[in-house]
Length: 362
Ligand SMILES: [Mn+2]
Image (tube, rainbow, N blue to C red; front, top):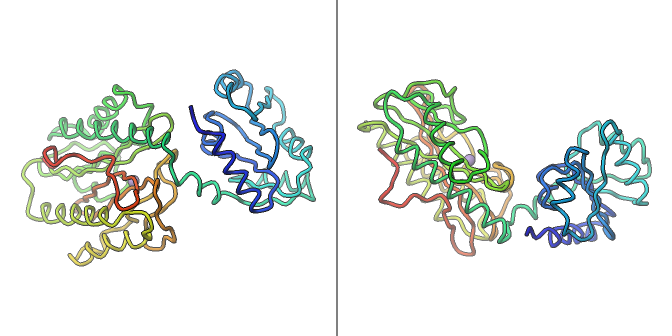
């Protein structure tokens, strides 16, 4: 069972510290994080008393079932055709709050609440929720480890099937089928299989190229398990690698290992980025490393903490982050190696490691 009541208690600690009377949660993943229900519409957590989970009729029975054991949480049904904006305003208005925090809200909804409840202070608490979500509890780690294992299995499948003559989409289909077959609840993002010169596009090409002998093939994939994501990239060289391909692959692999060695609790995210960036720059390819070194992973595939040159984050135990240096040379191709790692007291645990014997360079 999800430890949601302890998470809601932590929210209340934050509200008390900041002198805010209630939190209105709109982000679906934040609602899932705080209630265990994936299709909530809004969640109102007052400093004291019962929280209210707003759900549309289509999700009402599922919500009753999912939160049947959750104490201190009541469901407010939004009926078909009912004006949900007014309903939420009337519940907030009825609470007698002076200050209400929110996570993310549309400009329209913000204006509607502000204009209806003129004496209410609205304060953004998005960062405060991230401060909780960034540090994964044991329950979340179990789910992310599973997502990471499914992702590894998808990557091993990629290694098995990639060969000249295959379309990129065929490789993507094999990977996704393997992860699904083993229990993945979906993909964390659109699968990237990107070959030849198009491998120089970090976010992938069009998936419509036929793989050829001598290609670099960037495979960036993520399985999802009960809402939690993993993220992993390997770059394959089809056939015999050229000297240049070997050189670049070696630089990226060393940069990635070096960066992972720096990961532990208390380290500044920008120092980890710098370790990899300086290594790549020192080998002459600094201008071709065109993105941040990594990012947090959890219910979102890209979430705080960002591991980049301007990040103000300091890592702590329980963060899950990616380490993904890359070199992308227009017209030649790209290489990226990415793992999802867990930050511990004095080291990182690599959740998507492929053991030495299975090293995925063909
Ligand atoms: Mn990534």
